[in-house]
Length: 245
Image (cartoon, rainbow, N blue to C red; front, side):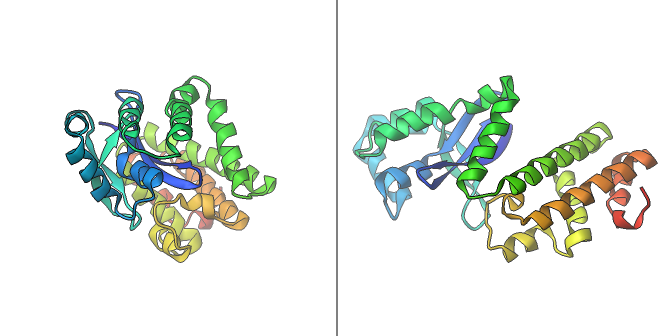
């Protein structure tokens, strides 16, 4: 399962999900959904009791719902039961909750948003803008965030086209750039802001977004000028502000 991890929100509560590129389907954390619908303090135990009480449901989950790695509140990845839209709906039917019906409607919408965004990327941009507005971000902040993302995309496109293939290499290069302007690793910056699985950039100030974009812009321009490829790209990430562009 080739995966892309994300967080989605239902009534202000987080649900972890993973995009399966091969099947073109979202897989949602069953435990997160059970916790939201039941308000249980131990959703894992609640799900176990459900499976024991309903043998047909237990068999269905065991046969159809895969174990996938998802990050917990502590940031560590652990295997958890996940299900696609069809599988989640089957499980929700067995949960007595006043939130069940609104959740089904919500799931029908978000379950297919990735496919819609693939056909029409503008939907993804508009949805991101709406989410930031819900969190009280100003239009100036949102504009800076979107411009910074475009700068980031151009940098990663350069890496992809010049023999930087592994995602862990992207993380290493990103960390080098981040330390150059902030004197902090990405992990340290997230700890400073008390973040766990959240996207650091979504919690940056306008100034931090500007510094990040400038660092990534200069890094790409230096790499292009030097025609850097593969391992040599690392050198273009070091002290880019000291180079003339």
